[in-house]
Length: 394
Image (tube, rainbow, N blue to C red; front, side):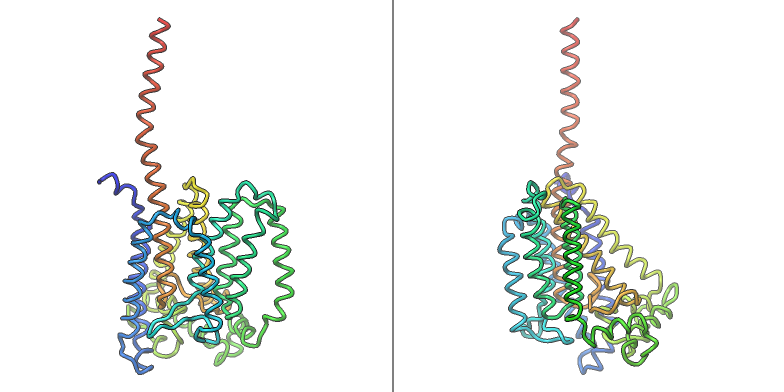
């Protein structure tokens, strides 16, 4: 039994749970005033996030002990389910912030695009691990998965949800690149992508989307309109200084920073816990990403390796886009901070993804442990055979 404990990756087990628990605390701190202003109990968002957290923990535990190979066998069902959900939400979903992205069931909701993130990673990892022998053939080995990827991206853009589509596009690129695709095929894909983007941009550009760019890069030209949110984020970050104003002491959450408990929660963390708090959170997220990349490199199964890399890239890319938005490096896209921001769909998918990554790590550790146990025996056997051989010569 003690040997089995050596198979656990405690870094990947503890870090996401600590981040999620800290997220519950920060959601409570950032949402108390918002809840009261909305005519709700001050604990409203806390209670909901706690429910999400406990449900996500169950998903995390199940995924940690469920062999990850099962996703490879169920790949067609998984990707088909994701597409059905994405089509369904366009017709039956609720509109939030001008995007039809949510299914509502009573007081709770599900965002199919979050499910599609993980589902597409599984699909691409399964297909490209299966097509390793055909990766030098563009039409047979490279192109078919790209069609499914384009369908998923098109459905998400139709909601429209540019932020999630950007994450999925970059995740897909990371898995495709790591699969071993030839450089000439990669060049073709990049060229084709640029051509499609050039044709799509005129149709994608709207006054609202342009306002997000001007708000991010010229916020002080319209401080009461397009630039308001990012300016309030700057104020929160600047006021926090090195150690912050203290937990629960944010001023910006008192109606100045809109929706501070969702995608701008890092600004509240910066104000209350300062630069130190921000560094700790980013550091823990970086640990998860780097550990995922390490597991990907150590895994000798191509499906497990690509799946681990895709999950690590999902956390890393989403973190970068979120932090880019609150700092004005990127336009605001409504992307939540992994494990921290308010929202059940994001937290559930992130912790399930961490469970899958844990299972890959456990299987990698188990095989390494078995090799270490066999190594001394084979070494002793080898020495005995040499000694016997030398004895025969004598």
